[in-house]
Image 1 (cartoon, one colour):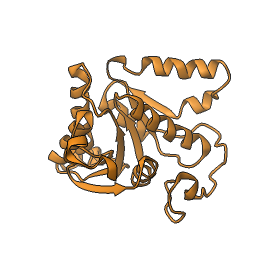
Image 2: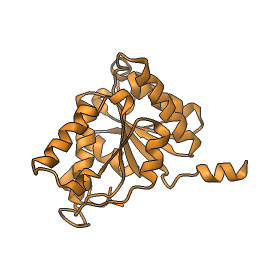
Image 3: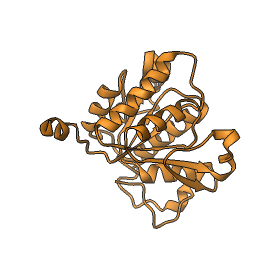
Image 4: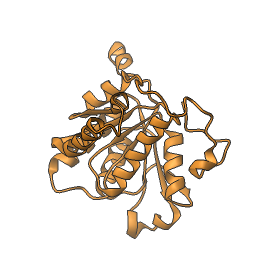
Length: 218
């Protein structure tokens, strides 16, 4: 039993999860979200997310919280009223705006995972991918591709590689898998292959709207 627990221990202390504030139409999205929450718990990983209790965001936070792991919800003050986002479980970090929200979520996390979601999820996902390409961080970025939800996004990225807008090595920044167990395992094994645009520069955090003393790099 002790050996099994040891094998489950992850090198990640906290993972940031981006996901929809809606549950989506398919039950598989909700099931995959709860499965990811349980996978994080089984590996003793805490959760960082965008706060609130609605949609997939609520499901992932409740699953991790119910499993006894720490949950940090980072939420702009304007979205804090319960009628907008519901009630956040665990620790709440209130920030001034969406820009600070993303910087704080990144600073708190060792890796990132995107579940199905809409504009906000895509924007958060693509920003942390871009930060990795620039050399701001080298944290793994995972895509939980539930029922092929992200197939067309991955096809678009492959097209951008084909047309010379993304380097083949930078394509490997994105780690994708159809199940939570496989995804976290692949992220554990992730090694950057791309050349960083600004090779491990000490990025000033004011560029990201965050105080200079705080770092999101690893």
